[in-house]
Length: 112
Image (cartoon, rainbow, N blue to C red; front, side):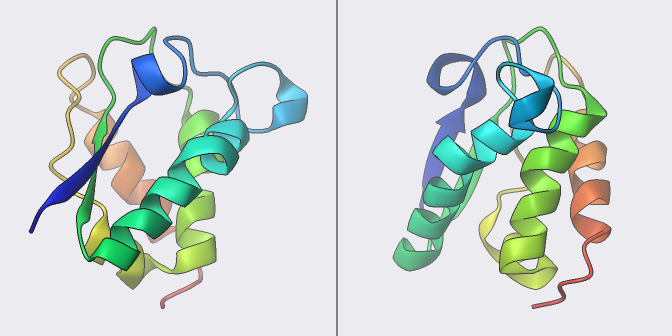
């Protein structure tokens, strides 16, 4: 299966912020609205995986992960996210990030 990629540091920001747009710059909500949602929908339509490269940033607050990936799972459903999100994403800077994203998706009540 081919893949579509998001490189957070160059396509969004090297300094991701908090959960909501009202919390300040580069929020998880803004990332979701401006990049993640559309790129995920594109991957679904093309029946490809979405690969996320999280490296080369200053790090990620748990609220950013929740604001972006929790919302993704709430809108599209855990099963759909699992099918189209490449969980072998790149995060050499923070090896625990993989589990944080998975845990956030698992919290969603949308099982679709």
